[in-house]
Image 1 (cartoon, rainbow, N blue to C red):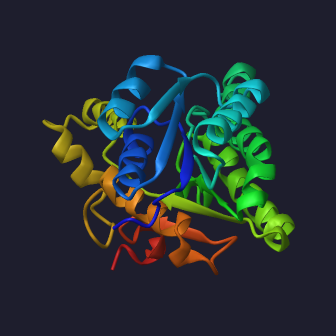
Image 2: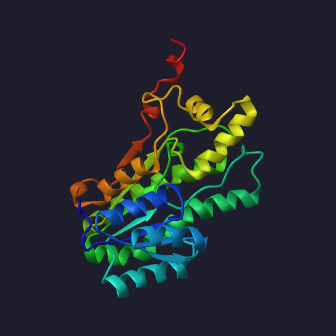
Image 3: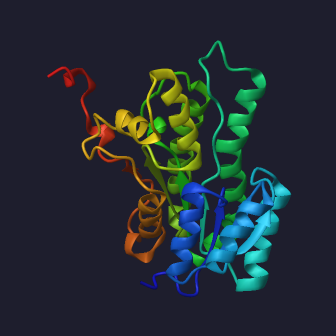
Length: 261
């Protein structure tokens, strides 16, 4: 498909996992992709694989976000979409999480999205573009010992709906995706911790355990989420805004109290 021919997209957190898969998918469909992330090496490697442009930096920085938008304008003539994928941090219960970790969770999840979206908005209005927020099923329910992460992902849903409400009349759409377990580097690290806790013999056993009550019975691949991003950012989704799409194998449809049956 070539749904993004002539379109330009910024992807934050693009060096690994969902962000990298998204950059590759949009490039395959014809987009000019600008990738950003804190570490130069990963985003440069991904950019080389998809003919993208890598710009290392902090997506929560106003100056960096404005530089990305200016680059889209000067090199490609404008900006059509932003995928706010950067995130992470915020683990521990309310009484365990430090002030520093809480602040890092705000910065990584909310500030990166807000700052990037705000910098991009004039250009998105000019081209009737759209924004995609990468939330999580942690935006819909709470996992254990993840107070900061859960709170910030819930906040991303609020930001998504606020942008959709305020800028729809300007032709700008904003949607969110809530993935469940996805085979990424971050999830692999969590599986390693679970293996240690439960005495499991392999990462596959760990993924099987965390998805045993998921209707599809397996984790997603980053490419599965990237496909959903491509749809929501494309003209095929032109009447979809303020929506929250789960890509979770059905995890959030399970009625937990009935599991005993």
